[in-house]
Length: 81
Image (cartoon, rainbow, N blue to C red):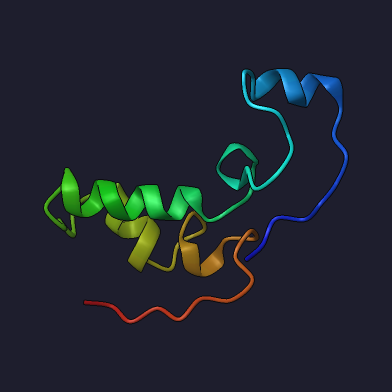
């Protein structure tokens, strides 16, 4: 998924300060891959892959908050461990 090139309001620019909204700053923008990568890191780095964790449900589950049902994910191939 790539970041669309759009102009943003001054309010949004201030939220990402001191970083400017130019170049490839996807991690500072909303609705990108970063939350899913962070959840995976937390699941395996902090929770040792525990099936009882909320991170597991978000990555591998099928609930409303899962990656499988996220409106921000265009396409996902989920191969459960």
